[in-house]
Length: 412
Ligand SMILES: Nc1ncnc2c1ncn2[C@@H]1O[C@H](COP(=O)(O)OP(=O)(O)OP(=O)(O)O)[C@@H](O)[C@H]1O
Ligand SMILES: [Mg+2]
View 1 (cartoon, rainbow, N blue to C red):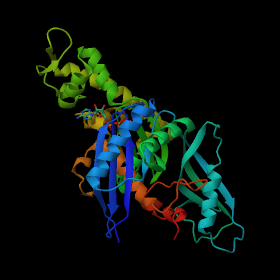
View 2: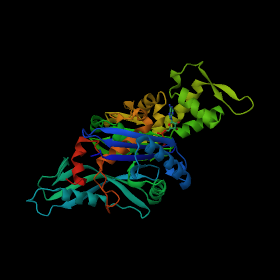
View 3: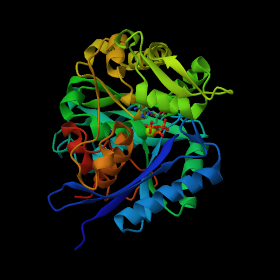
View 4: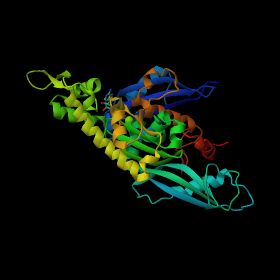
């Protein structure tokens, strides 16, 4: 029998990336094909031109189909944008007969009750991620199934999104001929690809700096405690260079990628680079240090905002494992050092790993979301996400702690 095959689509602000993978009998994720193309019709992570977005998605899907020799009928799709918000919610249920051990059904009921949060009519819940359980007042229970008690509480992280933004995204993917199996919050997907279990346990913040958004997920003691999407990314850095250097956008983008730095003192004072410019001259030389100053200012501002988001959930000092940077803009030189400076936490750049098959191109931080979406898809393979009236999407195989939770949602 053929290995089960899954697809995921990351509809980013700058690129669309479709990945097809299969799970081998040894439970290894093998990449069968990747389709990457420029994005269109998106701003700040949200669709703002349906037709352009459909075409961009269709072209990426087609490339992935050709590369993998498969036909993509459905896929998991990432969602981001400033419309996404999150909160922590507690679900409480009584156990009918405390002489019987707690069963999966009780856990499911507790999760359902946590899902009942005050959501305005124009928003929908997209994730209810269990954090820990409380059985008759006993805190921090990892798996309550099999325990005895008369009351079961679950602490969860609930993510909601604007219904219209979700519908627009689904319409675009379906317009490209692909059914949407599930929408997954992008920072949770990225974390799935690049954050290690030990980092989650010790406390960490995932920071995916893309083109139009910076996606954040904060983890403490193995569980997600906060998620947020900031409407700032690499495109803003490029725009700052356009203004400061007075050069066209494509040449600012190129020079940023090739010669950008975020720590001016690490750039030689006399270092200059040649760039295409406006006007009759056609090109000019610009000091690399000036570029670094511009990129430093924007990145510092960004990390201040990240810090403010982290503080909404925890004291940053408790995040011993520090910051894991990913997304295209995390390739900017010095950005890990700058984030260490602003957040006062250790930082590293995270690239997707543990991939087999045609995966070379995916070992880049820009593809953390795509790979994470695929990992999520295969963890969720037995859930009929769309057909369930109240889907409960667990955070995939990220956490040892959460491994048991899969049983909550996957039929045994
Ligand atoms: N080497 C590099 N140095 C600096 N910036 C880079 C480099 N490579 C890529 N980038 C920037 O990364 C950004 C794109 O990142 P990414 O592919 O993660 O975004 P996206 O997923 O399309 O967008 P979003 O997640 O915001 O919707 C661009 O702004 C690009 O300029
Ligand atoms: Mg992205």
